[in-house]
Length: 134
Image 1 (cartoon, rainbow, N blue to C red):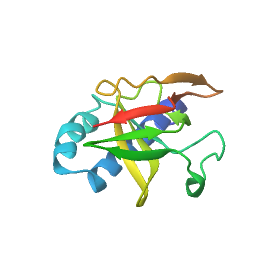
Image 2: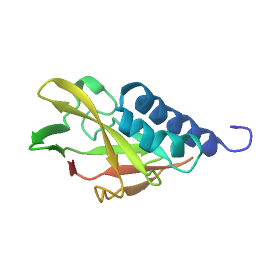
Image 3: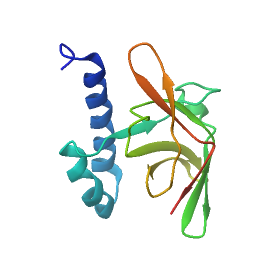
Image 4: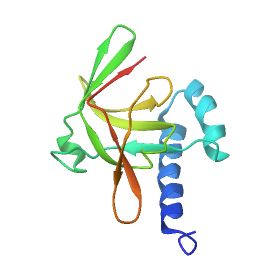
């Protein structure tokens, strides 16, 4: 793939990581909802772990997820999300009362704004400071 396009190879690699997280960690209903479209190339996923203050050092993640009723409220900021500018969903890492957890943020359901960050070889995205999860 990288012989044709380094950016295309990167998109596929990041998408595969999102698919693996869903396949290994998500509930059956989430797997049934996302995996078929993701594996068929009809959806694009991304994973958000990079923060402005700590880079990709997951031990220093400051983004928090607080449970409010039947949903989580994520507060923090994730930057340089590969595929983020075109992803249908982002898997975001956040700190909860039990440690670190992954949250699937669906772009349509949660009206997430993803800003485009341009860099040399590809584009990346940025999640807003606050995001509501149900």
